[in-house]
Amino acid sequence: MKFDSNFHNTSFFLEISNLISENCLELISNYAAKSDSSGKVHPAVIEALKVNNYFGLPIPVEYGGSGASFLECCSVQAKISYNDPALAIGLTMHMFSAGILLENWRLYKDLSWVLMEAVASQNRIISSAFAEPSLAGSLLRSNCMATKTNGGYIVNGIKTPVSILKMSELICMQIDCRTENDGLMVALIPNNIEGITIKSTWDTMGMRSSESDTLIMNNCFISDDLIFHRTIRGSDSGNIFSAGLCWFTGCSVSVYIGGIRKLIDEMLSIVSNSKVSHLDKNRSELPTFQSEIGLIISKYYALE
Image (cartoon, rainbow, N blue to C red):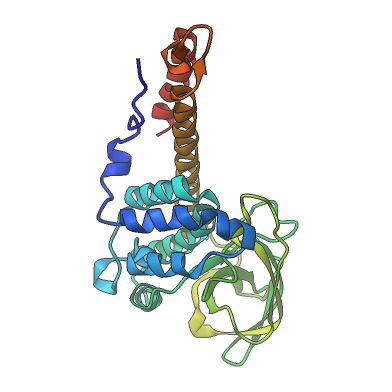
């Protein structure tokens, strides 16, 4: 018996061939080790993603995007993870922010479409700066204080870790204005505004190309037109954040699916080419290996 290395070619992976090309995926795979050793995504990979309109995937076609569904975006994340899991984790943060923009527009039909159009038509890369020290993963709080000033807010605080921070052109973040009316707000800002400092604080083997570094804001001015979601203190502001969290968790789980799929393929390759000398058989032909591997594959199917 031989194991079929294409066991994973289910609809979850096959229906998105028009959204990301095999050439792009092959390029990602070829540069994965180099990106990890350098701690920086190779420019050729970024360019290939832009050619494939990756950064506009979930954005509606009328605003320059691909109009991909949530499931299709998750499938793309799994395929990228199969070739470079660190890159896929970093790019999930872009998908998270693009998802928040999209859900905000769907709910309010406001001017957030302008931001979506800029992201899609100009292939802008968004990093998601929602993680902060001492927040324990909460999206509904922020220690980054915004002080109201003429035309916008002055913001101070630290965000860490922030994936794809250096390669991004835009940063999506929640900030808090603790005044009588204003509450939590979500802004989409350029990553080069005055007062921003980026510190390299991420050095984990196999994950370096996620570029998960630290963002420090010191008296940064964020204009009113860069804030696309506002809450009133004490109101129920969970809808947009809940929707954004769905994008994050769905894409994150898909990254694990792609990584597991790659591990299974490697395992199948090893056992199919590993011979037990005294039996004169490959391990893939032995019932004990077939049984254990079959259990792993069945669990994978359930996860997918």
